[in-house]
Image (cartoon, rainbow, N blue to C red; front, side):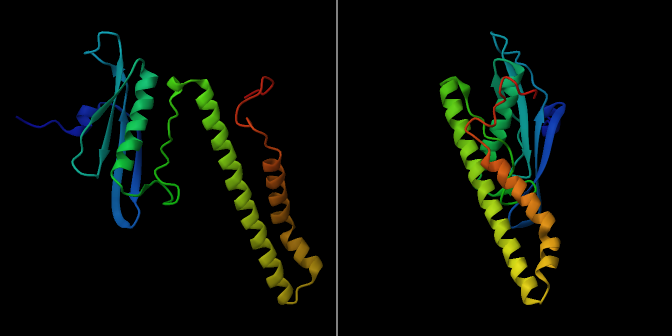
Length: 192
């Protein structure tokens, strides 16, 4: 009997990402998610969503389940992320420091309060990272100013040369400093 190809078991792919492995040149890992569909074996009308990882051992279509198609899809995304993490290898999409960029799901089953606390922790960490990047950029600008002064360039010319960079950095700094807890959630007057 002929073995089914993983792509045919996956069905119609709705999302695909090609990953690389840090330190391994030329290896490509392809992660795919198929279209969610009703689970014929479910007595309650549940759904399933297939996902596949190719390039990391024998490719095998796995199923994620949910009470509706959205929950099945979210479970498939989580399944991909978990399988990649379980391998212990460092896969990445564009940058090894960022990784595969497959989001972490915060289960709402534990209540809205937990989701709010996790969201605030993510916001705090995001602000911390932005402040560190801004600080690093200021250090680079100061180093550039010092280098230009050592080359004998007039202070007014240095100011003109670095004015745009400083303005952009000041605007970013002001935006980050204006952030208050809950900034990522729309307010009632926010037209988002």
